[in-house]
Image: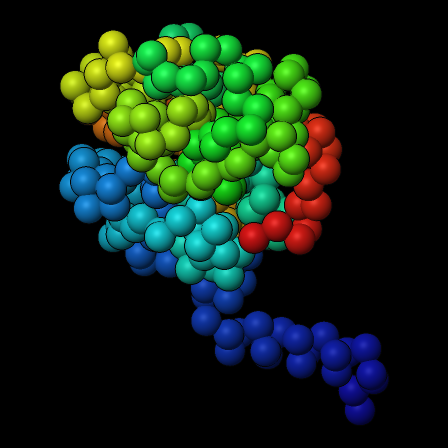
Length: 291
């Protein structure tokens, strides 16, 4: 007769033999990877400009790639949280929010601009308008981007509070305009007398002739912000995660890098974004309750 221990061993071996080979591997290895890009400009334009990225990833990873742009930052966070996308290019604070809701996601690459993995928010005003310095913001509307935008909302809002004692709850009226380019255009047109957005994006808008530098005044810059991270689902197979990581860190095509407004990608990890958690504390934000 078989003793209990020998029976358990045989049963386990038999079950293992019946399982498909893929069941032994840890993690997921989907045939299609869904890659989400930031909804900071027109979605159709972003997807069109991302076709070289799609081709590069398909050739490098040997998988079908679907480029997607969510309606806003919050929906991008939720898509990552519920596994509807595998790879996402987050705003820094959007990543912190996503990490608080989906602890298993892993940041692995950060954009490098001008030799640095950081960037800044710029606070601007309408040329010839009522705001000459940030002290003049008191009692007036101030244009921000998406509520979860790092350089378009949270960092400049903390800058106004920490450096100028201007509280968005009591001292001025926050106006959320969605995208960075919408903020720049609204300030240029005088629809709001002042606002904030990514300095990199503003420079790009001016270079393209989409914003007239003579119609705005750049008032102040924020402290350095860790640049936009790329994160992936933590439940992918180790081999796939390594392949995705290498695809971005070894990316050399200037046309593709231009899509991300960076010169290259460098390795990063979660600790690099603790400064954004400190920003949340300044603003007394509860990450767990934010959308």
